[in-house]
Image (cartoon, rainbow, N blue to C red):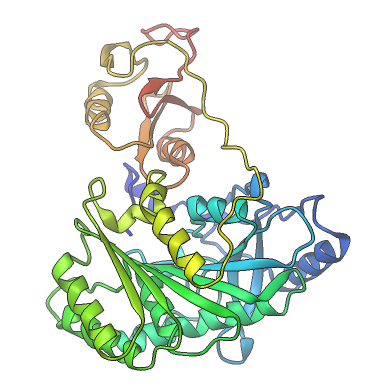
Length: 409
């Protein structure tokens, strides 16, 4: 999934996990177990420069769990857990692959899907596979052999599930696995095994794209899904949008047809265009309108819970300041002409979106995905030694009214 920030500097901005405080609502036994695991497994990494934001609403924690051959790798894994003792049904979400070095890829959280499932009483696990983000081990690339790529990534997913099944607060008989993009391919490869406790899998825009003309990667994807269908052990839900920039409707139809003709059980929900690119639907705040109804229907079919049982408040939004209207470019303080041109372009971006600036004249913005406010601030801060502040969010201005249009406070 492509980076959506304005500045390329953000590809170098990652997260150092320095605060693993455990929520007081966890039992002492679970606190001790998690703390012991963290103390044994944490290792410094030069790729991580900032503390990761942890969402207390969802009891978000990061653990390093064993994976890979002989359990020699440690997989950076995000956990979201409801209040209470459990045992909780489990959702495992598998990430895609961004362009470039996988070790520079940020920790995935899938915060919108995680929130929806925690509200329904699920624990949620998001493991970063070997060689990605802060996970140790090596990322193994089988090139155009899509079947092997999927199987290789599925091994780490299985390790994460086996770890989860050993936790007393997980209901080992009620597990569902989802994956987006490359994670969807890994999820479908996993489903060729009868994994204990896994009742169904969800493939969201699953596959792997290879840029260039070195091989027929589309044809190889069709072969891979045909192979997975022949060995399929677990029912699946597939969701692909009409304007997916990676996997268009014709390719999706070929992959699905190959899968079901080989014997696989897959319900394809082909939805229409989603914003500018359906491939990032799962990472969008507005994507829940697309994936949640289909997911709830599938969960009921496989005997998994769908009723909301936990009230989780939405995170607080920045307060509208009435400093100016969002489209009043002349009112923005500090910006040079190039920054004002950037802001005009920003006004055509999708929501959620955020624009940040500094009295040094630096600016940065972000659209779509998670934490647009934080990403915009980081993009600005990467260009300024002076503090950056949010100027506008979505369709309103949050800049304090005490700053004059000319930039004087």
